[in-house]
Amino acid sequence: MKIMTCPINGPRVISEFAYGGEIRPMPDPAMATDDQWADYVFNRTGAPGVKKEWWCHTPSNTWFVAERDTERDIIQRTYLYAGDV
Amino acid sequence: MPVPETPNQWLPLEGGLIARLGVTEFLVEGPASAKLDAPSGHGVYPVLRQDTALVLRGARLNDLLLETCSVNFLALDPGARPVVLTSIVGVGATVIPGEDAGTPCYRLWCDSTYGDWFLQTLTGVAGELI
Image 1 (cartoon, helix red, strand yellow):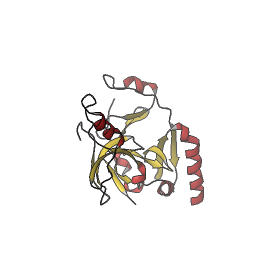
Image 2 (cartoon, each protein chain N blue to C red; image 1 turned 30 degrees about the horizontal axis):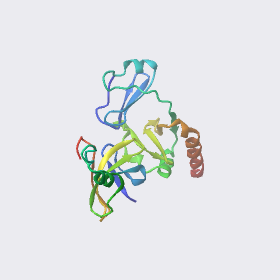
Image 3 (cartoon, rainbow over the protein chains, first blue to last red; image 1 turned 90 degrees about the horizontal axis):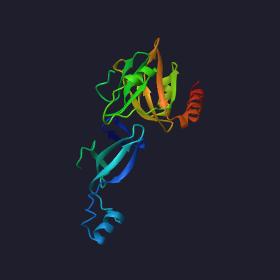
Image 4 (spheres, rainbow over the protein chains, first blue to last red; image 1 turned 120 degrees about the vertical axis):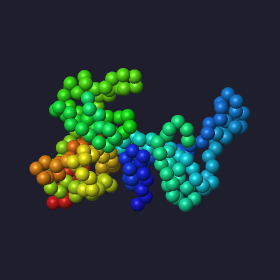
């Protein structure tokens, strides 16, 4: 059974969580080229490694950040968004 | 109005209770005066909820919850006034565990659109425990 730790509600089974996507820096829409913008909108990297992701504890609707090693399938840490990630 | 200091705690009110569900979210249940006494100001929004509200009581209530959710309520101290937000039979629920004359007695809230199904499913599972 996989366990993830919600920063508010503590360790819970993974079925209580929903994945919200990888956190990726958004280029400035006014400054980015069409290729840069298209890359941001359409492309995702599947390369394994440590990624910062949005996750939600669905019973409490708590959104938070998880740093997850997708190569070793390990959740390294979770924390509430504090304005920068 | 008193406010629990940390998330996942509750406090009694006169004729009701206030539960802290997160950093900035509270569940207030009680008489209309509770709404009048609620904190107000910039960034504070009272939201009328019409959740299904249940009180489940029984000697084997913890067995029922062990079958239907992933939180071990036996490990909690009702005296510490815990609030648990978890998934029960797949439905997001807010739970306040307690006791009534030595018998487990829990208050539960869930989205009212799940209410009938939620209660029927719990009743069905409880029937299998007998």
